[in-house]
Image 1 (cartoon, rainbow, N blue to C red):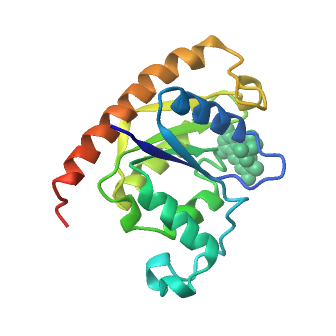
Image 2 (image 1 turned 90 degrees about the vertical axis):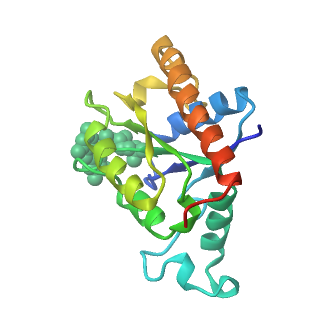
Length: 192
Ligand SMILES: Cc1cc2nc3c(=O)[nH]c(=O)nc-3n(C[C@H](O)[C@H](O)[C@H](O)COP(=O)(O)O)c2cc1C
């Protein structure tokens, strides 16, 4: 079964580091034959939330909002990659997530967190898990925390430590399992 997974990343800093892990996961997913899309808030800038996408007439919605909605709708699952800003998720990530709603429903998500230090963004991951549940894209049990992101991958997303190769196998096995299972289930219908 062909799957499509959208990677959502939330940093718009000019010196952002987390994009290294985006490149790593784009490669790992494509090695498994999964189609991917990268929702980069720098490439698709959104205003601070005024109206959600669903509140617009689609023909009058801002073009980036429409493009993101199309990518989310096509996706069967989501990989959310979050840094940690003051123990929570970056505001650009929250702003992006909040613009959409039905696009997420009955699809799984998985959380990658990272930070410059040794705590690997786990506090933001815990906040993100609650947000994703509310959005209708419950997150899988495994998480993928990355300490010292600046030393973990090169700019092209090659892991600089074998541990990330090993951990990513089990993590993506689980995400793909849920993504396939829920895709099959959605084909038979959804509760609402
Ligand atoms: C506004 C701000 C708040 C931060 N707060 C935390 C924090 O609470 N915990 C932490 O481990 N690192 C924190 N950091 C450091 C980040 O882990 C580090 O800058 C990381 O590279 C940010 O991700 P990005 O480069 O993809 O934007 C913070 C950085 C910024 C810019």
